[in-house]
Length: 146
Image (cartoon, rainbow, N blue to C red; front, top):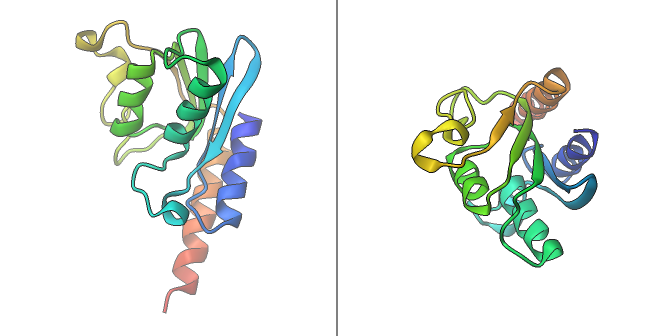
């Protein structure tokens, strides 16, 4: 999660919402990314989506079974769907997303029987630091708003 937090900080420094993600394959870091929606003008440029693409390239296969994805914020429906499609075995996230979280807060796609085999989910890892990073970013953005 420390590496995902470093990615989140990098996103914030670039003016992006500070969300970071890494993918680990058997103890080896194979991908790291952060939000780039503003930079790329791309609604799909979430940290998780970018990290999944990098991991597939690094592995030489779109199937990421056996991999663990670490994200600073609970993945949304789009990202959870991509995680399912990539067959990632485990998702570890920091802060819950009570608005659009799809790994337990609003929906739980990883445990949805119709999407077997699904993925294991562990939430709340370094949640305070992940949440504080987001809150600080939005507090500063509101302060600067005209």
